[in-house]
Every structure is written in C-alpha cells, then in structure tokens.
Amino acid sequence: MMSRDELHALQLDRLRWQVERCYGTSALYRAKLDSVGAKPGDIRGVEQLELLPVVTKEELREDQRTHPPFGTFAVADPSEFREVHPSTGTTGIPVNTIWSAGDIETITDVTARTMWQFGVRPGDVVQNAFAYGLWVAGMSCHYAAGRLGCLVVPTGTGIPTQRQIDFLHALGSTVLLATPSYGLHLAEGLRERGIDPAGLPLRLGCFGGEAGAENPATRAKLETGLGIDAFDYYGLAEVGPTFASECEAKAGVHFAEDYVIVECVGPETGRPVSSGELGVLVFTHLTRQATPVIRYWSNDYARLTTEPCACGRTHARAVSGIVGRHDDLVVFRGAKFYPSQVEKVVRSFPELSDEFQIEIRRAGGGMLVEACTVVAELVHTEPADLEGRVVRALREELGVTPALRLDLFGTLERTTFKAKRIVERD
Ligand SMILES: [Zn+2]
Image (cartoon, rainbow, N blue to C red; front, side, top):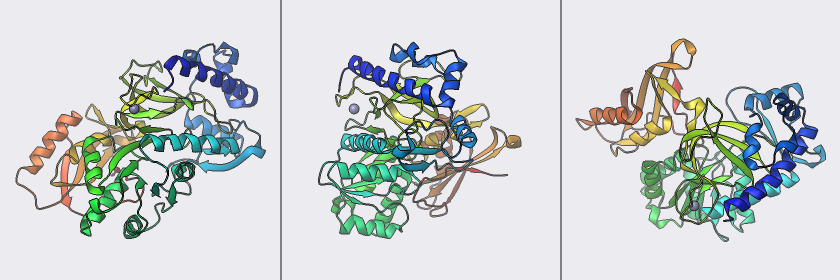
C-alpha cells in the first residue's frame, strides 16, 4: 500500500542492483546492453528501463543451448541452486528456471501474499489441485499455504475427480486451487452426484494456469457450481511462478511490483501504451537471484492501470485479467480474436455446457486461418432458434462469423489440467 513514489524508489534500488550484477556476470545480458551502448550506470530512474533491449524466451533457450545446462543468465553461485523448473511448453526445448535458496524464500512470501489477497487465512485447509512436478504453481502454492499457517492437501492433478470430491468432503477443504477448466469439471462432478455445494465447507477458489475466472460468465459458474468466491491468478514459469492475483474488490489482478517491474508496451512499437490500452506485458526481476530476467517479453496481452483500487493496494492491475497469449491469437478473415472471447459467448448460454473447442485450418501452415469452427455441447435437446442466437453472439463478440457445430453433452474431452481450446485440422 506504499505510495507509487515510494514504490519507484524501492524499485530503482533493486533494479540497479540487478542490472549491475547481470552485466558483470552474464554474457547474454552484457551483449544485450552493449548492443544498444547502455551501461548499468545509465539507469537513474525506473522509466529508463526502456533504454534496455527486451529478452525473449527464444533467446533464453538459445543461451542455454550454447551454455548448457543453465545458460549464462543463471548468475547466482551454483552452490546456492536448490530447485530447477523446466518450462512445460509443448514445443521446443524447455527453458530451465532455477530457484536459489533465497529465491524460494521470496517466491514463498510473494505467493503467500497473493493467497492472502484473495482471502486465505491461517487455519484454512487448502486443496492444491494445481499440478505438482514440472509445473511451478504446484510447488510455490504448497510452500505459501504452509507459510500462511494453512493445512495443505496436495492432491495435484493426478487423481480421479471422485477422489478430489472425496477429499473436499472428508478433509473439509475450505480453499481450492485449480485451473478454471478443472474447477468447472469439479462443479460438473458435484452436480452429477447430486451434491449440494452449499453443504461443503469450501469457501474460496483461486483459478490460474489459463484465463477464465475473470470472465463474468465463467466466474458465475464457478461460484454457483462450487459454492465459493472465485478469484483469478496469474503467473509465468520464467518470471513468477505466481505473482499476480485478484483482491477482494475483484477489479483486476494486482502485480507484486516490489518483486517485478511490469511494463505494458505496444506489440509493434515496443513503447509503453497509455493507461488502460491493450499491450504486451514485459517483466523485470528485481529480487530474483538465480535466473533473473530483464525486460522479458511475455507474449501475454493485458490492459494495465495504476488507478487506486477499492481495496487500497497501490500495485498496478491488469483490468479484466490477461486477455490472451499471442500464440493463441486466431487471425480469421481479417479479424483477430482469442479463445477467451469464444468462452465468454459459449458460457453466456445456459443451453450449452462449459466445454468448447475452436477447430482451425491454417492456410499453408501459416498464421492465417482459412477455416474456423466453434464446437460447443448441448446440455439438453436443441431449442429451435439456439444455433442462430449463438452465431449472432459470436459475430458480435469476434467481429467475424465462424462456423458453429453443436455436439451432444460429453463429446468434448474433459481435462484435469489446462484445456486445449484450439485444435488444428488438416
Ligand atoms: Zn485491489
């Protein structure tokens, strides 16, 4: 809750420390600064961060390929390394993020703060259905729940839905952590078994790993279906793991700005966009010891504001959450849209289930999509005019009209982890 001026002073101290040590130790960062003729001493204000070049995931990967296994951006003493977290992307070689002993302390504190922010308190029973193993949020939330004085039920994602429901009952879980698609799947499980969520002690849910909880229709379904207050969570393996969460005002995700500097820049210009305008998020680690990133190009789009929040926190917020990943952008007949927009439409129709897919065929394997079909599921038999109403709503939201196919309930695959919304067809 410190003033923005106090925050900037704190950020500047930490930023200078970080850039100085990276320039002195990392061949990658030294080359990047040299390429624009910048020296660590040039940074006399936080806003001068934009003098430095951005770094992409591709560059981190290349740095690790040429300097295996951790690359030159691993700047802490190896004796301090405690955990390695390879990124879980489906394509390419993973980027190895390292947590030092000190990093684990900071990550635990920051994650504990995000959980406090959405209402977790000592004594809560936290059912952690985030994936453990090679997904960073499982571990960080596990540590953080312990720090807050909670009892953790480390279910992860590897157990059947029935057992997750059994644990909700038997152990009296009060907090659920999961992806929104899995949260909806659990709600579906309760409904099918005739269990009234009001009879469960569960009171809070925090949903991350994919966009969703910020979407009003999805939030309403999670809240009604599980009998909870639902909140949105955001993080990235290379940066976070989890460093942004909604507060009780549910007015966007607040970033932990004493931990990372967050910039929002134009995708083409690389220059800061004005407050509330859509841009790409760029992150700089202020306190990370082992594998710090300086101006990491996230490819995630959001609208940032530093307007005061009703909760009193001064940290910047992404209003309406993260709009989408650049990789998920669908470019179809001159229109651009994200799966989150299709989700918004599908979940506003009570006649449809929560599941949906976007089948696309790319022109010559490129970026442009030449055929696009939205697939949704009917909960009951088809009301006569439903198809026309869904198509109209899609056209309004997306600015283009995809084909629509309504399948029977249960046709689309359910997931315990991140849902695959875009399916490529030949
Ligand atoms: Zn707030």
